[in-house]
Image (cartoon, rainbow, N blue to C red; front, side, top):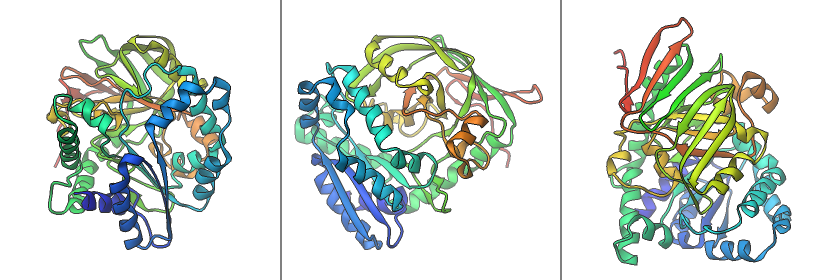
Length: 409
């Protein structure tokens, strides 16, 4: 399976081109998969493959022992690794899979200081991804800590094996030809995306029995996207593997009401759960989490843009990942089992001609900007989403957790 998975990540995840460089960010526990990725990259003609490993145990020790001020300084080697290769049009592949609770008890200010400092120091790297210049992909790979959390009743070896099999199923690596499956998966999004983009939606109204009652306005030139996306050089890739979502960016200043989470948010090794967020004219005006309120606060207080939404994502309650009835404790997977929203940065591809715009132009269109982008799940089996169109007509987008409109043939 690892060989199939590696080929999928290289050929469809980042769609690596002949003569292009690839940067891989992974845990030391991912070494076997990384080696297969490196082989697959060179097989398609990579110029070079640079691997950057991290160790979550060492990472925690660093946070436990260094003071807050230490996290304001970003080492030169990390800045160069990200910025220099971004400017050379390298592709970036990040493997996620750390222990979901590895950072529990760590001062949230340290985590947020480091995150903000890295984003500022590595601006060319993040701009390359945010503006659709560099291709990138985030994909899951098991670690012992993650496997033990998901399959807590199993032995270490059984848990790792179970998680590998589960991940394989979510990315079609249990099939004979995963790449062909992903090509078909790409086509499956296109009709629904096209229908949403032709509706001329003014706003979406979310309601459910958790108490969510939220109105989200869209930009005048909104676009929904799903599956993968194009970079500015016209090459298509999948930034997230797996993916089941259709998404867009709301208008920064047109979000009003309250929303409640439906699944825990796992953020940098911490848990945030049983929370609500209230908006007025786009801005977060109130929030509270029964678990991890300090972490939620650190996310929202990152900068001015983190007080606004950057993404709305539509995922049916009966999506393939949701049907597994498994909590992954990992945003990449759990967000593909549930409708979700994201605090922070919006997407350039979610407005007409957005890939040709700079950040200032995108902002003027209503697309939010921030140093952060954090997804949280809101989907439930009774979630209803009604679209109010520009002409005043109302259309059911979601009814009882699933698509509420039929596609015309």
